[in-house]
Length: 390
Image (cartoon, rainbow, N blue to C red; front, side, top):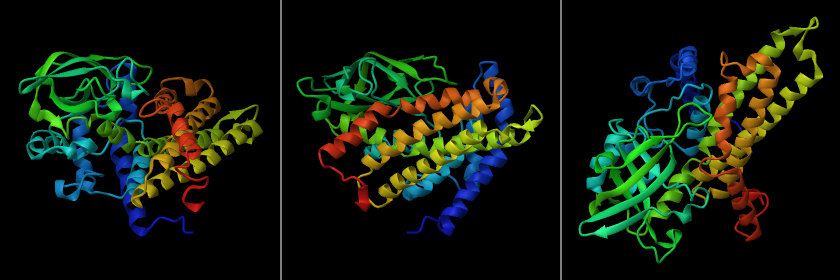
């Protein structure tokens, strides 16, 4: 059993690390300064400039098929790269990407929505969550009623990432109230902002924030249905499932960077005439963090490997997200404790991470939902204890 990276994986990982270190990390102090002023750490124009620089490094469309100009990288490589992105708190992501379910668009829709999104000319958001339908996504209420060649949408979506900046939204609405949304009762629509929906910013404990999207008699042409009528919930689950090994991959980079800061601080900070790293309490926090970090790494890479094998990744991805999200919260908490009062200030990124990583236990599947999936798979015999090695 070989746990080493291939030469290609190592080369691509190291190139991504070089880009993050050279081009993104130097922006951190300015980003912290802006955030203390309640400004975005990175403006959209600056993000796009960085993405174009990354394109020159060869990084464009990590998961985008080659026919659309992307790299179409295997899941393991994508995981490794997202870990490198996690090493900086600057809100950067590589360009050339589009929502995975946009590939279900027809040719006309691809021209109008998919291709401009890949090129960075348009910004999308995915809208399924509602005030009364978070983890219980099948309980959505936003109604879409057929009226001639249009559908009329009424309702609200909430906690929508990119909702404040999006040019268009992929909206899942109820089209057949006689059926459950999860059983053919919901449909996905491509809805331009110009069609009349509005967004309202939601302030959270983290930087930036999601939005509520308000739909009041918003008319959407029938041609803007994504996929098939009744396919909305299925597409929504495909959208949500894609991130379940990438989120903990990102958490891994955060934990690595934060633990590195703690080790450096423990080796330089002196109290009572000795480095604090000589104290057993500090040593144990560092040791526990390293053990958890490594355990998370292999759960995450195994989930990505499962994707690359063409197997159903849901069980492995749920374990990776559950453990990875919890791990990074515990590591950052220890790192703050090691730094003491300085870690609590906004001069360092630690308190920012502390707020940021808490969301990882909630979005795109809460801890509780991951536990439900994992236990259900075992109780119903969908998988065996020990997975592919059982």
